[in-house]
Amino acid sequence: MDYRRIYDNLITSRKQRVPLDGIYYEKHHIVMRSMGGTDDKYNLVHLTAREHFIAHRLLWLIHRNKSAWYAFKFMCFLNKNMSGRLYEEMRKEFSVRLKQEYADGTRIPYWKGRKTWNFGKKAKDLENGETWIHNLSVSHKGQQPWMKGKKHSVESRRKSSESHKGQIPWNTGKNYKHRSQRTAEHILKLSEAAKRRTVEGGWYNRNRKHSDKSKHNMSIAHLGQIAWNKGISNKLIVSLETGIFYTLDESVFLTGYSKSHLRNMLCGRVKNKTSLIYI
View (cartoon, rainbow, N blue to C red):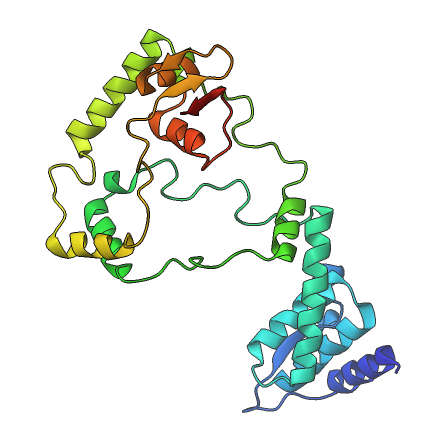
């Protein structure tokens, strides 16, 4: 279809029309300003709202460029009674152009490089922070975590893996020392930090006792389970390399692992990376 001929006929016929009183007209730039048009009288024509909408649709069909598309998109937002077919066509065009602009770098996402209003701040330090934390806690009571009992599918894990390829992990270059490698100064700093947390904020269960209902629920949850340390409290730990017997505290100092992690390794719950075993 010759859209240029239709557009020229529309403009020529409306140029010769004398505007009537009581009829709503809109000024239309024959050559759009974004494409070099001016506000001079010869470049303006009075059109009705419907004619104006049709004129911009014709311009978009003629040029198929960014300027004509944005102008017609604005007309579509003003005209709420557009057809479903036309709306679908506009949305597809919008999606294609948006992806192209992001790929070319001509459009930058509004969130890129910006920091949120609470960046680097703790909730309790904000205005009405304590009230906000309390309301958030109340609103989530009784709700199940959205991922509880669910597992990511193979396809989901594959996509996640591909999206992270080439990225540098956040903890690259950071050195996490085992307890046996920590200096006395490092241990002192950790101790002071733990004391401050206890004194200032307090542990969540400090000076608290489980209610009878809580004890009953825990008892039911553990019913039928075998205690992790059943039968091993009096067992000895021996090294397969040297044949020397050790206490649990001596083994912790020797390996650098925590008591709970060392017990799990000796009981076979996790891979045993030491030469120690229970006998």
